[in-house]
Length: 217
Ligand code: FDM
Ligand code: MG
Image (cartoon, rainbow, N blue to C red):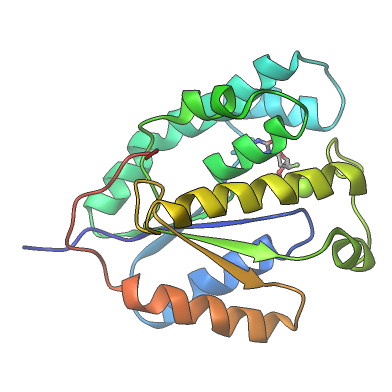
């Protein structure tokens, strides 16, 4: 039986190094001759993504629940693409996914369970890597940008919710429907972080025998 591609998600606060690490991870796959595709959420170029982009740049305002549902809908737009890639044996690397959806919206005060609901039965990653960095260290990396949410206080609350998500996944045995969750110290040099990321990804890199799972436990 041929293997399906592995589904790897990289999460973290703003400035935690997700863009750098997902690009380095893609390069690792390519160097190993393993087909892989890098996706990023929000995917800002689709019609829904354009609404999200406008909201994040404060060119438009939306109710907290409305923007939450758009972020989820943006993942659903690409869910079948992800499934097809994995089914064809291509690894999928995602820069942010449903975990960001919960962490950012719940940090605004929306109920955690409500935030989780629209992502139920999306493809679940086989591995979620959380690039862990303190809001202070993130700020020291050149500070946050101009977009909504790029504020120290919000990032602190988001970090707490990411840890709660990780805890719940680990409590569920670490291999539940949410996939395996691994926290990585992202405060160090990028090559050091990249080596640690690859140490966790490598065992899955050449594909997976089992079926694709669904969010959530
Ligand atoms: N974000 C991202 C959310 O609030 N919900 C989501 O579902 C996703 C995927 O969008 F502040 C937030 C996180 C971040 C902002 O993300 C834009 P990037 O990675 O900085 O482009
Ligand atoms: Mg950002």
